Length: 516
Image (tube, rainbow, N blue to C red; front, side, top):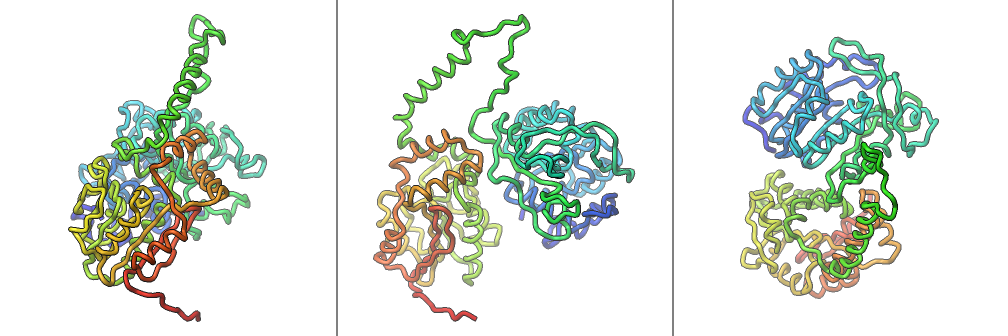
């Protein structure tokens, strides 16, 4: 965990030595979901997970007492900037975050003027919790946030009242204007009278899509406990949906979409004809270009610099259970009882798995990838090898991980033999592959990608690009080849759509376990 010397040895509880972040918050006295240490930690664990903020510049719009800053910096954020309009909150948060010195900055300023003054891509991660509905023009605020955000924007907000009361479907595309909105004030009052605008989930999605941002999950999931009732269907309001929700939007490779206002007549009232409409001509030209590019795109996928820059976003969007498989990989190694194991990640890409191992205390780490662009952007606290072959000269290894990589290798059986040869006697091999599958499984996989923001055109294009580059094999092929190669016990530890993860022992044979 990357934390300063002043903040080490605090265990897992971020607010143990600084209870002021919740004791000075007047929301601790409210009857429903009062602010507490557990509530803050449960909430911020979801909004700002460590993998999202580690080494990143975080901007918190509507920062209140700066609890998100304590959380972010404790979990390795390189800097935290809070923007808070209320003077009492801003002054208190400056004091509470003073121990972080130059890494924490608090501005007592209104959000609109602050972000308008910032350059494009000024902050890696932007958090706006319990604030977006205060603006009567949410799209303009979202436009500015997306301009300033380099990687992601996290929104925590409420469902519109008409949806919570069941008058409209949760999938309604609306922005609802109301004056019935409770707002926390630093002097203890809890409500203001004024017009505000609350947007539905679909409306927020559209406003972010217009700015080239999409989602890797429908909404963020909060733990089901008494501290998080606002985010549960079991809330006391009687509504069938939670009072509040949170969404994480990430910058996508796709271009921004045009709004209708972009094509309105100019100041002289000139309206374009269909025949001479440059937009229509541009679309026709674009369609022709796309048609010509189809053949050129077949088999064109490369792990180049552009892919490396966006690899984590692409992986989360297009690989089912990407984070889950990495987490399970690390947990399995933890349970094996190795002492300072020698670990190699095959196809280590930008080092997400190596980083997780390092955070767990492992130091004898190796990564191999045939893409120099990937390695240039990789987690560097490991021995990194640029090669298309397995680095047998660096073996033997106690743990070999090859998640989502052998599917790109033609001489797969030979590569598996080299892995077997390079694995210690009691070593383990964790392998994740995309398998051949039925049209039904492909359809389910396409649904997964659509739910993560990919369009049908993007999905079709990706298939063209990967044709003859990614070549899946069947489940029987892997089981038979692993047996012929001489591996011991093989078991499946994760499966989703056509993606399967194997845990493979070098010599160990199957053990029978009695059920109790």
